[in-house]
Amino acid sequence: MRILIAGLSHETNTFSPVPTPRERFCRDGKTLLEGKAALDFFRNTGTCIGGFLKVAEAAGAEVVCSIAAHAPPSGAVQRAAYDGFCERICADVAKGGWDAILLDLHGAMVVEGFEDGEGELMRRIRAVDARTPIAISYDMHANIYPDMVERATVTAGYHTYPHVDQGETAARAAAVLLRAMKGEVTPVTAWGRAPMLPHVMAQGTHAYPNKELQAMCRQWEESGRALTASLYVGFPHADIEGAGLSAVVTTDGDKSAAEAMVQELLDLAWKARESFVFRPEPLGESVAKAKALAAQGGDLPVVMLDHYDNCASGGTMDTTEVLAEILRQGLTDVAFFGICDKAAVEACLKAGPGAEITLDIGGKLPMPALPQSSKPLTVTGTVKTISSGTFVTKAGLSPGLKVFMGPTVVLDTGTVEIVLVTRQIEPVSPDMFRILGIEPRDKKVLAIKSRVHWRAALGPLAREIVECAGVGVCTSDFSQLKFEKVRRPIYPLDPGTNG
Image (tube, rainbow, N blue to C red; front, side):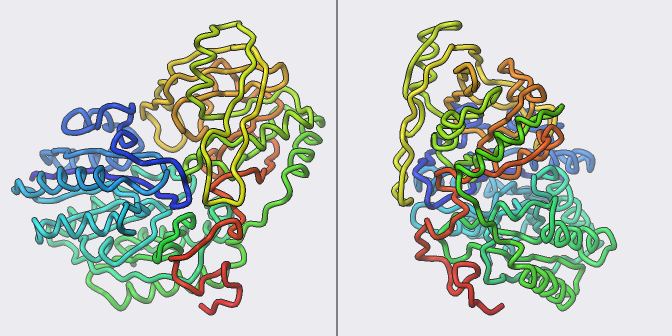
């Protein structure tokens, strides 16, 4: 048995000013993973390709990898980059001789010129190979379009947010595909949407209602009622027709049962729509709350979330408003991760370890989609740590995965240790602090540019959680964004929407 694996993954924030060229899909910023090098990189990791490999190799298959192109969230993918990736994948598909194709896709890719990057890839693949069975793993934040599911044999979406089940999800999809190839099951799929845009800050599976929705999907799969069942909360920071919540269910030959389960998921989600809304509070109040909580003392830190600028949702990671308020209110013993500012890092590298330096950090990228952009912040501090920013993560989203933050420094102001990075990366693991000489458990305050993913590995370290509404294209205040293409009416943009 010969199996082709390919990865093309990007979550597109159409309001983000961060460009998405070909280089952004390279793990180290230079070289695209492909072939044997890609298989070796992902083998025994908690990633989708790692999950595909586990199932395929256990089945004794010969596995070939086309490309493994994964880019951090940002603006629309540049058309030349996308076309090049599709051409490579389709050329490998066209070589023929494949018994199955396994695709690691995100589900919320927008490309210059069209909204549905994954569906377009599927159309191009099926133009050269109409028959080979295909299994796809999708992120829970997928915005579903027809071709994404109807042109595949089987699809599966993550059941957890934080996404700690990436490898498991791919393995679920691959296992169903192998059963179908043996004639044990006949996959049939139904899907549907609800007219709602759940706020990302209200999508975590640690709480109602997504916790209950995903549990329902898992129970159906475990009982055999469904081959795969996926509730996609969608990615709302995409001004496209298909943004929002959807459900996809695949059964063994029973289309009506699949349709009934889809409707059950959509009905439950719609009934809980108010719980999918997040209402932020003024920044000054949040920072004051964090200061008071930190003053109470305790064995673990207060975690502050600068969630309007989460680069894992397309944020620039260079907005300074939350950091500025932390400094203004005089919080102490703070680790702030972080500000993406290549020029500031280079200035610190030039100054050298132990040097005191005054410089402007952040506020470099204009954000025309917002009513306001961020401003550079002048800080004075000592260059405490210099790091290559490369490590292997031990826990959290993708255990065993090699991570490239790029050259990284810690600038210590005396009250706040500011992490300055050269590549946008969400701070989700204690490892990211520890390689910089910061023990996160020992700080009074951890201030991080994250939304939900931090809970996977940093969550156990949090004594209290304070959500801070700063500035950024991941804003939870939808009134700051101009939606022109998303289908209307849709809740909560249109409060009177009927389900």
